[in-house]
Image 1 (spheres, rainbow, N blue to C red):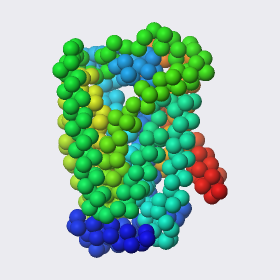
Image 2: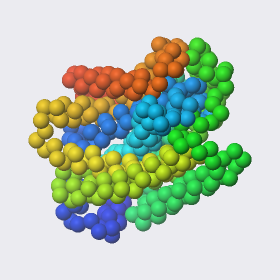
Image 3: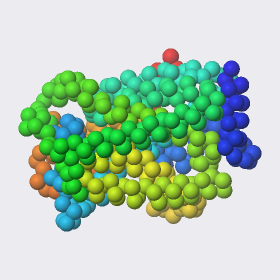
Image 4: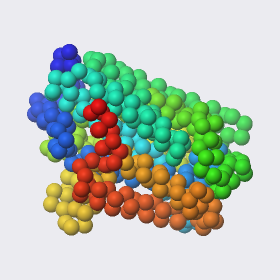
Length: 428
């Protein structure tokens, strides 16, 4: 039974040294997670930051030559080599480096937190697990498939759905099984990224030494660039479908990392990392210290190492720095107990995006597609020679639309559009 398994899980948590006070606070948070109106405020802010930060990375894909396919050709930006001696090149490199993979890792951790909350809520109500959650994951996979086909080839929802089902099952196992899986997946992923990077360096033509890791590859062919700049919408859909195996490579490549980060989110939630008490604040300080202290130097080294270190940057250094981001944002929120008008407005805006995270994630990619591709405004080809500034401006503009739209929507509705559809389908 679920109650029995949760009891076993509690023993595992005590084994890692959690105090009785933190255990009680965690239980209260889990109970609150099962009630629609009782939310952990910090989680909504973190989700909002993660969604806007994910766009901070993806916007360069939309704006680059060859768009989605350009990533596989070495194009992760709009500048050829992003010359660090120029202000524009430095701005593009810093902008991308602070975002590339970091907010995606943060979003993955938060998915794990959400899974832990739903597991605790089901146990509190005496419901079987995974129970209805299987349908939630199925909806996520279906939505991700639609998103992949019609909007954006580098969708993350399909991978999240598959990993969520595995981790949901793992939550019914013992604390020791979860801990062993967590460590094994982390080790497996780190070994794989290290070996792939070594293979890249040892391959003929390796060690590019471009110093930026942006756009150092041969680039996409002219026909692909033309497809996204001038091609029709149905042609782009057909291209995604015909190249689905290559375009769905990232969830396969990062599967072990996704499992690791999901389980990390579960562990952080159970440890009370998102609570408003002193124990939670202490954990957030440690996350910020270790995550930023290790993640920033690693990110700097991998970025300066060039495009040959792209895998270690996005899938190695990025998760570490994402942990630091979590802690840093939490520390900032801890200091805003009595925020002024500006801080209150920013917090409210991020909370609105966080509460409509699924809808905002899809909408931001739709807006970027319509802005950059030839089926819309075609800015990627029209402004290709104008440097990186317009891309940063596009990101800011889409963020403003998301923040405004989410805030206005929640004044009238309790959930976001896609969130409401999901809930209605699950009720059936």
